[in-house]
Image (cartoon, rainbow over the protein chains, first blue to last red):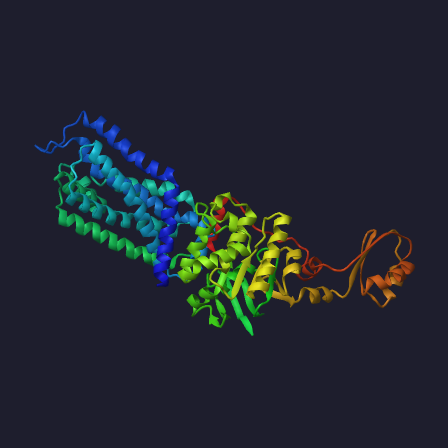
Length: 254
Length: 321
């Protein structure tokens, strides 16, 4: 009971903060919309996708990838922000409370996943209304499941890095060496099929690729790895990151 | 009965011994002060007693629970008010209290009543629905004080509770702390290096230096330890030999034209001193302050405190702790 209340407390804090920081929600939506509207239209008007007879526009093609990108950026930085909690003594207040570190970890993950899911739902509605994304009830549910798993994984990665880091100086490093590689090597912006072997190897080794592929399969009906494989990989990634994350939190020093 | 017992409590950070074989008994209901220069080991001691740090050697119990083996029980029974702000700026005062109540497993049916009560205690009832970012430094400390009480701890740790506050706010906060100890009967352990604060608040205090207790008693007794009042005279040609013969003069120190005497019962003997010492330009007599006691025990050398540095350096240092 105590741990559940604690979990709720940590979630409540994240959710309240999210509600009040309206600018955060706005900025998290602007970036994907710019990718879709400007990049999607711009590049889409001059290239042919190698998907025959599908009638999918480039803008639609990158839409699942852009959803994953939103998760990548938002969730990773959400996790990293525990550095800010460490800066003020808020972290000590939580650590001195009679709660296990596992609860602390899950409270953060749930809080971040709630915030992120709201952003994604808004992007899904905008997608259906303005970008001609043919969501059905079934594809919307599978989309949310895949997104949720990806979110849990990436928040965990952020929390793991955040628990190890003690200054914000590492932020730049993290986005150069973690976020951008995960994003560019995920096939978010290009089809995976005709890639040279060396690049394909990187894409296939990137768990985010499977989230993008899974979304593309359920939303647009075109994919490379097959939906079961996609879901298994994304699920495995989430489980692994949560396990490493709880371990990292149990060892975190203040 | 001792609420806190420490036996040979020791903490080493690599080569550095921050706290060395500390023995301490703190009684129920007392306001106990830990005084010491920067880096003396005050915060480290508090961190160990509150289970944030594990001791390297020795043991301690809080409310009868072992700090190493029963950390969770210790945490349930203590409250902590930290040196740095520890509440969320974007939440209101009451929301911060609510979070705390949830984390400490306060019965939710009673939580609302408890929140009202502690808010009244620190006079923040009318500000409770404002976001913390609109609070002044003093209001924030008061809210954090109230929060520390929410789960009815038997022991409350206050780490430099008035650091960086203006004199009015400090005085105001002392009032609240006294009120807490009187009305709530909580044992309060306070670290500070404001001597005035320690004198005002503490029933007993320990002066810590280099990780060891160098003196422990009531403020009044500590002041008595110095052996008398301080008499300061400005005089060109003092007849020190004659003054030294007086039996109520305990200590004589001369710095140029300034002569400082430690005198038993200075009010009574001032006349006689003046008669013996010669033509005095000015004289000043005062009872010793805790500051005199502190300097007596810890010396007057200035501690080479590391620069606070920028935000990043502080973070890095914290990480290495």
